[in-house]
Image 1: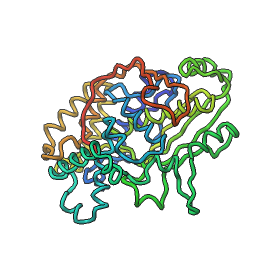
Image 2: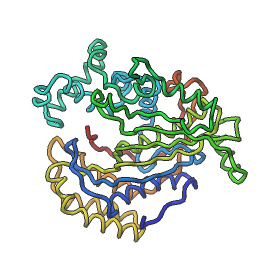
Image 3: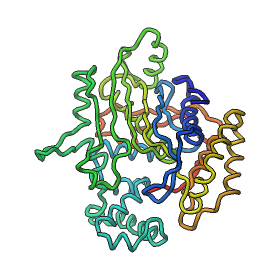
Image 4: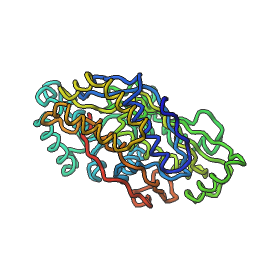
Length: 395
């Protein structure tokens, strides 16, 4: 990478800088390309990358914009309980699955229903809002029409076998952590090919693997920080988690995913009486959505120019230069169409790049069985991010 790898595990600022460095890479690398997309929203994409977050430095919760951390926790709890119905999320103000749930509902009603409500149209948005209101107010309707299919929770806790049995991958993982912590089979997968047609969205974070290591003498100082953060007695072994994510919405999705899997590492460490080590994030297609129609076409024509300008700003080490780039795009690009506003995430990440990272927060989690945790068992401390930046989510 022409701007160099950042040091890893050296403090909260570097954690956020890893994310921001990846963003610069996508917007400037020669292998980054414009891609039309099944969502109808175009993207700038780059395949292949990896970041590491040392949890001794704190919870890797992005500070260059506000991340609503309770929504992250609610979604993770939903996964851990093996749930797939959107009602729990809707009742708790988590709306990241709204569009997928509604489109899944339309797909099950048949081709005519899909044709009558083109995705993102005003009529589609109105019907989606009415659907979500019924999910919230009508338990019978929610039970019948709120399922997202066999998504993450179903795969983690209720993987169906050819013999019509179920595998609780998560329970088996924790049992194996206790019995054989050096195993190379400490894996949970959400990618289940026979079930993909039945999912509102095939798993983006496809699978994760755990690794238990002995703490070396020269790592004792960092290990003490981990124990102080986790309040754990075992200073001899730590737990690392590596996630492979096939599809990575860098602006909206990835910051959630980083925080979620860091928390999962912390929870699994508690279950196995280990100290949390690193969360290692391996990316497949990492992308920034760049709008639809004429707005998306602007990036087809100007992508190479954008790459050069991002490289120049990186070379000059000028955060204000990113804000100037965002202003150039707003002047030069066609405005986003009615009903499609907020689908260009490039200007949003440029605004983030103009901001100075702040120290990471910490998260205290109650010591109890993973499937008994509630939102009240999570206490976030010292989180003081920059203001949030709103953008539309692709379905």
